[in-house]
Length: 486
Ligand code: UD1
Ligand code: CA
Image (cartoon, rainbow, N blue to C red; front, top):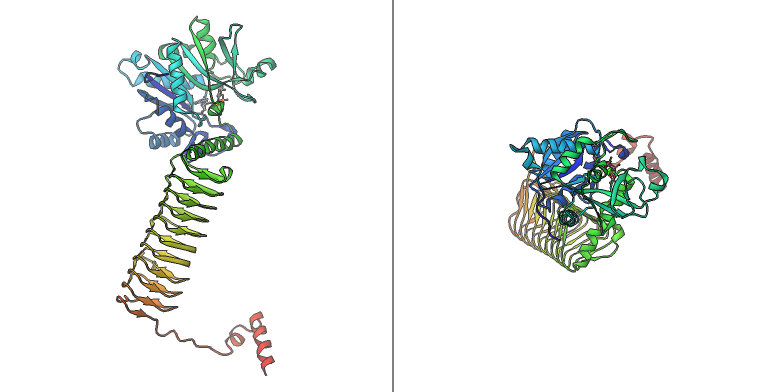
């Protein structure tokens, strides 16, 4: 079915979300790398509406700032006091009419309503709803779903002919009505003019003492207008989030949906249950994602790459054929066929060339590591430019911080630096140069030279522990050992 561009989409996000028991407004809680309201706005954007307005109230500065950030061009309307979903819609319509010189026009056509706490909904479901609404010539069309456990949702009341007679909220429902398993998803298409008129007539005569938008259905029916119900094909899409148990359930559903999309596109996900993926992640064909892996933010995984087990990659690019295991990386670039881990930490600006190797207990930050270069063990690389095919010995430190400034170290192509080399930046080590084990590199090393540190001859001060640390366990142990020798 094809639908027209709606005149407006209204998203309700003014509530506090009391049941979340949180200092953060409910709609700002995140699943799969996006806030709840941003998920809803992303689905709404697929309808290409003329205008989108988010109703904000509780912590409105915070929610508005977030909306500006994730959805530029979307406006906000303020609902000072949370007097219910019907009241919130009224505030939205006032603001839509108010920013138009001809208020009637602002609302002519279809107005879509959805709630900021139903993050699983898809754009095409809203599109189908609009199409069904327009095809039926309805004043209102409600998206419903059949749930095994309808607890907490408004129930769809159908008359003897099967037509929708109204919606009853759980708190206001009789025992018989609570047994109804067809629920209100909270997504609706309205004729804008009919909606604008009917929201003026909502009462607060109900369990919560609020204006319910759900009451518009029975009112419009009473006026002899057509009200339709469209049953969602996928009931999972309409799950609302009211508490943290539902937040976790929604995350699991969305994560599962995203992973299924990747798997169908040719990605092996060994254990979907322990793999988390954000919405904006892309994964290439024949990549393998091992258990206990999180791919977050704008992470991109190349074809045939092998990620995990135990990796958490945020905004990181993994080249084709690379292997990344037991690694935490953020803002890093990993070249094609590079090998990272186990137990590596790549921080922002770590850029590894093709076939590079970063091994166990190695941390890399703001550094370029050339093609084929190996940093296999126990090393910190900060603010360095290392050439290609170099080898950095175990337990080395790029000493980048002099207490005031961060300085860079340059190591040339094919350099071989010994274990426990300290590179005191700023310093350059030339192409093909070597350093001995334990070297403290304070001065530039010319290409092809071997650097060794002078003045490092070991000196033993006999009896130092006995005189300076008397009575300690170390002094006692030393005493026992020396008297045994006598
Ligand atoms: C609502 C519906 C219910 C439906 C369910 C679907 C009503 C009266 N009930 O119940 O039929 O089955 O959603 O998930 O509409 N909000 C405001 N201002 C307010 C009150 C709420 O903006 O004054 C916003 C909230 O921020 C939230 C949304 O509206 O995003 C829904 O409110 P909520 O309190 O969660 O409604 P439910 O009890 O879930
Ligand atoms: Ca809700």
